[in-house]
Length: 81
Image (cartoon, rainbow, N blue to C red; front, side, top):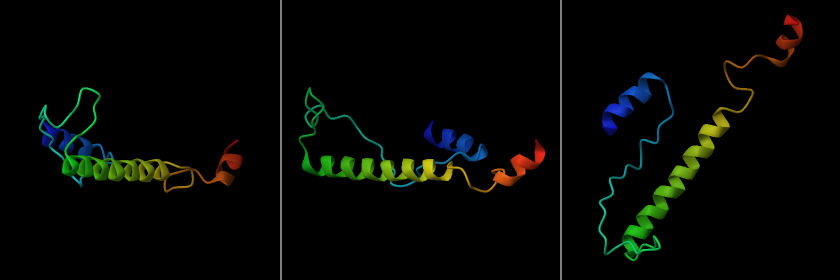
């Protein structure tokens, strides 16, 4: 399913976080009832993954900021009115 969804996102030219990639298997002994991760290596991996995800979101939001290719030039708005 994930690879099929990536194909659709690529066709739509949607931003994707291609790396790091994660396939997480649920092991009840690692995760507490409160969601706390008891395995240090798993916690480190998840922390790194979320840091990369946060950086990806910041890049996507910055790319959608005004002033990028395809945006109208501010002076063009005045000329067309």
